[in-house]
Image (cartoon, rainbow, N blue to C red):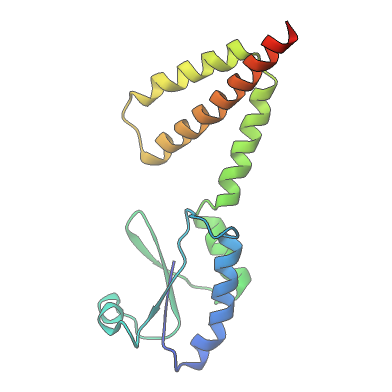
Length: 158
């Protein structure tokens, strides 16, 4: 998401703290996220703003798979958060799903987990979208950690 602004514009000045709060809410750890929040000062980058067709400030746009979308419906924190929630997977969403996946597989035996890893590995040989490939790698990593823990527990129990 990109906020195009002018530093002298009262509306841009008012939106600034809201934009900063959105960036913090989407990416609380400061680590990389699937949602990038950027500012472009049209005073400093006039050519970029002109090329983007920016006529009013603040203008917020977001891009999904190369397609540009204008953020409409207001620039309140709640509205912007809904745009993120409706259009992007945030770091929290990704980690929450991974945690549920891990909990589900904790109940399985080491052999069942190993078989699932083999099944997922066989899927990686096929052509697939990048997000699915990431999903597979993440699941295999979770399962590999589980199988190591389960194997160590099984050995200790003997």
